[in-house]
Image (cartoon, rainbow, N blue to C red; front, side, top):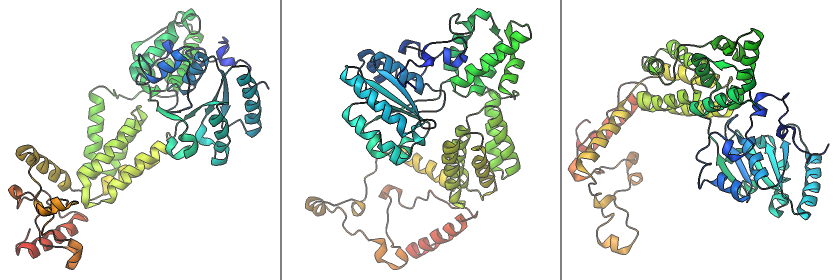
Length: 442
């Protein structure tokens, strides 16, 4: 096998999948990742100058990691070798290095594109290091996982990490339209149209993955042709994607109605309704991380200290989904939703935040009492900074009678714990401290 032979994907054979044929060949054709592309942006500059450095592309499937690596290699006149963590091994790497050294002596660079780099273990990743350091290879790794956890530190320190984002609906729409009308690489020679309803459904169900969109478009086009139709409609796309549309427009009223029903079911302690509305959103194509973020907010705002573990559960579910993805990632989200709905509720912390924020707005930057100020120098000590401060751990029960608010706000109470869950114990503890401090109950 000649690893340095021209890649089939660059030959644009008509027998190839539409997603492969439509892969951009130059930076100007690329859609999306505007934070990395465009005038003065890092990847555009690299493509124009041909000056490459080792990179790690971190982003979701279908965001353009492989395409950008190939474009950058082509712009530098470098040989681009694709190396998969799933199908390639040490023997393949040795052959690549030998040929890269030969090319280097002939004045040509080699870009090693390592797909799914997070699947390599530490020892395997170590194999890249000396060749990257010597400049034999320019490494471009692609990963859907956080490289901070999945790529070894020595390799990570020699690469710049660039974060790619899921494509927006507008960007997916541009790619779909281009593929439908491109007469050379796309479906333009078929003279097919797509209904607005079908196009919207395709964009929504693709969830920012251009490969999913193009594969579904190609399958739907085949169905339309088979039926002798010149228009791709919703039914064709439903069949291609094996999904039925639910009434749920992520940019319209139904989006807000369903997420509102979900939050109110959580707040109303109804786990059955909560998990129903959650699945309505996921099945309709909502970004599950949007749902996870709402649960993290809910855990702090509506449960708070009544069950402090609720926030941990919500954050853990978010992290678990990010790690697992669909479809299994729905399981920790469901666990979190039912836990939050079943937990005791309190918005006391949230109300305390709002009340404190209002006093900050009204009173501005009130001076910190002298006894609470830091006194790292003799001058500050002479000025009274830190004077008469009482260290709580030196007193019984680790509590001391001492004021901590600015004098203008003395006596203010922002946090009023409820009788719900663990907050009942917090309330009793604060009342006991207050009574010890003033002789009066909080």
